Amino acid sequence: MTHPVHTPVLAADGGLIHFPLADLLAGRTTTMHLELTDAGAAEPWLTRLAGAEAGLAALGQGQADLAATPELGRLALLLWLRRWWPAGPSLGIPSLNPALLDLETAVATADVEDVAEGILDGFEATPAELFDTAIADDGLLVAAAPVAAEVRALCTRLAAWFDDQDDAVRAEAAAEVPARLERAVPGQRAYALAAGVDPATPGEGVLASGRASVDWARVPPGILDAAEDTVTWRIVAGAAATRLEVAVAGAFADAAITAFATHEGEPFAEVPLSLGAGRFTGTAGLDEAAARLAARVLPGQITLVVGVTDEGVAETTAEDRAEVVALVRARPPETRTLAERAAAASADEEF
Image (tube, rainbow, N blue to C red; front, side, top):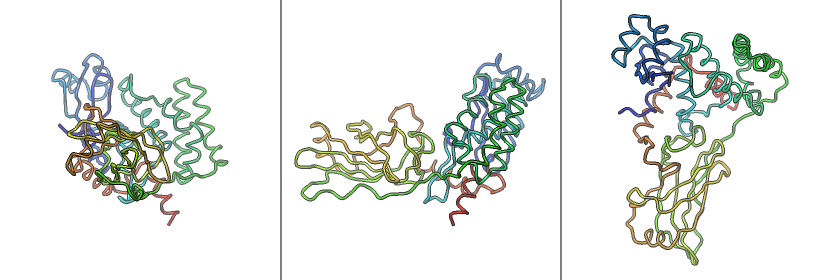
């Protein structure tokens, strides 16, 4: 089964619409695979989207490969960017501003509704919700400077769309953004890589140590560097107690993250991580059973997992992540989204 990181998907009303990641990142929107989950709910928008004959065939088979609709592909790509974009200084891939992503996704969601009304009934976020998130705490105003003209144009489009939906409050808020941009102070989302765990105190013994990579599926998006081997850890036997120390290099933003030490797939110690100078770190004491386990197992039998350890998580492999990074690096400049163009412009200004 293909991992979700390779397949942008739209959760439509009554069906899932899948797109090949390589095509979307390369600026090609040629085909889309429709998988129906509720034919009755999907029938109205499917008929409008594919036509009566093709729609009827898809309803009968429960699935179909259709010519891609650009608006759907655009929204699927933006949703993928919000979840899986592999930012990392060492990868040469900049972090994307979430407010700019939310604004462009709001416009793309509205465009999809115009193409096939009802297709996104019950969708994960409406244009109104995405716009509200984008402008919260003046995040959009701070991020817009490198692409101010485009932000003005998108907000003007949204203002007209909200007006058509009789949402006067948001229509007014969107219409006010261009003027507010003139008064905004440009901002920048800082990030840095930092060294691993600090040196051990003299007299203490390191029972186990290692490096690990963050599984993108186990952590919130946009929080950590997507590069490999950013996690360092060790278990230290001190005079009074044994402790687990963890450092995760490359922090973009704060979040509630926990690291787990595991043996044969079972967690035996956990460490809540706190945001510091360009990294997350944490230290926790081990109970007697965990300390004995750490002292007796062979090197390499302990692994470190950052993020959730739920068995239901579809893990990403190093190969998954490398493939995605390669596709993103090869992305043609002319296909970039608003957030990507802003990040590129900010990088050019820095150098």
